[in-house]
Length: 527
Image 1 (spheres, rainbow, N blue to C red):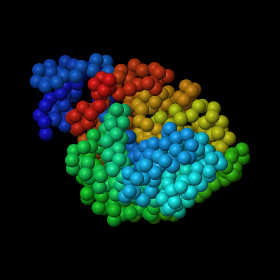
Image 2: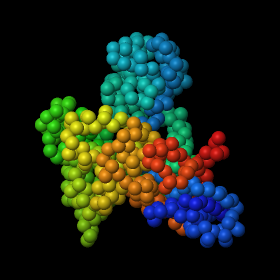
Image 3: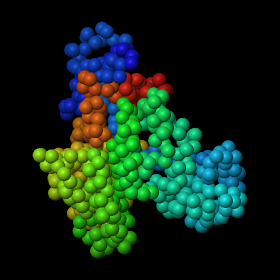
């Protein structure tokens, strides 16, 4: 390990241990933080430094932790042949043939950025029929931009079992073994890490479906070769079968290095309010769409399966993250967690979490806080919609009163829950600026706000992105704050975030990221 000393100075050092930044320095020797202090304490470190980086008034803070990411989803955006310039089906077929000829070992042919004009409505069936007629028995899947939908031929439908209407990550699990083995998908993890580093992210909690379909070997290889610039805590999300405890035991023993760990399981409970699939405590409004009127949920979550898995997972020493959108699902999950073994203070023995929490009852948040619960929220989520587009739907589905309990990060913080930040990447791409805009300002994409009383302060949000995430990854002794002895995962913003007007926050950027003491992104050098 290098003994090189790098000193960062700034008028805005945010350690995560206090609410306000200060003028000071962070000294990094090798891969550890050697010292953090005020400007008046910096002289001896500056005199010894091999390199001094003067950050001016730009905020220096711990590296960000994104606690809900999917490389499998990200990879779909560039999977296979580039179809973006294809003007008709004949060109699509020609490009797919070229790709397949270069990938003879792959059981299927894939394409990305299929023009929407070839995938919408009746055109979807026409394109699929053309693929059937030209590529024979080869399974073919072509995703539209952003992998929002797809076209697949009959062979792919039979092999993989999903449809164009439901081709999101949880549905395409049968395809993962085929595409995760591709050399370009494995190599693409480098670009994935570079994208995260450019946004200040130095650690993630990665959703790895089932046994990760062979990709765990790639993670092991990258750790062994020293190629990782993002720390990865893998969670198995059961989709092809139930929670695989033998795999989990083996993965926990296998991954104990500084960059890759395995900690537990993740599962969906309910889904979106708009579809009536979010489980509510009280029935949906009579005006609700999707057949939800008068019901608490259109399709009951698999609570029996979830409870059985939870108890087995907890007994084995693993943690469980349950994804809940409706207040009924949150209540059900909190009750399940409350039934588990606890310590003398009434706190759960394992670090179980709830993800999303779009709508929650304050009483359930209070109980969850007493249990030592972790709330994995999506701080940027409001930026996906305009205000009235979202709120008119919410009012129609669940009414005004329950709308007031939506995106209630303030309630989570005040209840004593550990709040941390995720993006559901690739649904959202990590952006601290959008997080400030949405979670501190309460703004939708059009700049109009909602539930301003449910927002966080800047300091609370920064801690959620750093210390909260480190706690969720069970690595708070090493990560999440700027303190002597901790690993040197640091990011430098392009300005003083504490002087930011929330309305102007979206273009906040990261200027530099340090991972394990190495500068892995420098915007000035990139330019």
